[in-house]
Image (tube, rainbow, N blue to C red; front, side):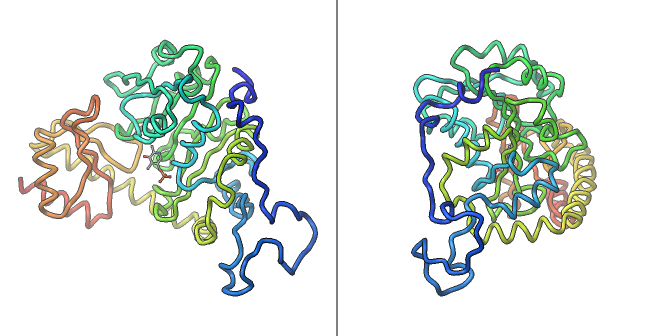
Length: 344
Ligand SMILES: *Cc1c(COP(=O)(O)O)cnc(C)c1O
């Protein structure tokens, strides 16, 4: 691969990061803070939060099995997605390659950053081959976007093909593992040391039950993380989010319990939907949602909406004709959905 320096945008390489008041004193014990024009009142929210979220990263490092220096925390995964473009792609010149269909933010951020976005259609098992993705790349391709388990299809991508890309592609490979907690497959974040061009995305929005906090994670080698940290807003993770995230992370057994319950409900729901005469096919899933091909997705979507039950209509997405994406809820919620569907 190319070196991280070679892949970094020239203006970013030359950038000196904003230096905030708290960065400049370091090490010494201090108790009178008159350096940042904060108010001395309204504790603890009078103080700026830690710009590098060190206590939180320490806990995340333990839970995720990744070194602290290899962790970036963002305002949702969406911040990390945008930073990949802002740090490593040249507007108007570079391009990225992505699987299709997948999560919408990769293409939205490409457009915002004026980067050509090349879609490579998944095969009829919603899977990839390294060859097909490589064929879409040229000398201006900086990033390949992968998502596994993929949204909205729910399946894992073929691991060997991802590894081939990591070994052969000159640029960065992003593997979005937002749903890896719902899968038994080995997460790619544990192989960071093997692949210097790998960026793995995780989030607290799904298995961890904290979508409201807006906390996303990127795992990568230190050179990539340092670049993200240089470009991000200095105080991108607010104090309330840092505190609340620490609370949740200290009780991972509670999260494990949620995940186990969701997995049980996922099988039950998949089986029950599969039995419905209005369902053509339930696709295999490694995530906390089910993609189902229906006889009339649009009609069923509207019918459910009338009943106050909202699912995601994916029928206009490539390869997902007549498909609904249904998130696994509580047993009560799933039963309400099933009752409504059986009534049709
Ligand atoms: C839900 C989801 C995310 C989460 O985004 P946040 O900004 O962290 O809430 C990221 N990637 C994929 C593929 C998702 O489905």
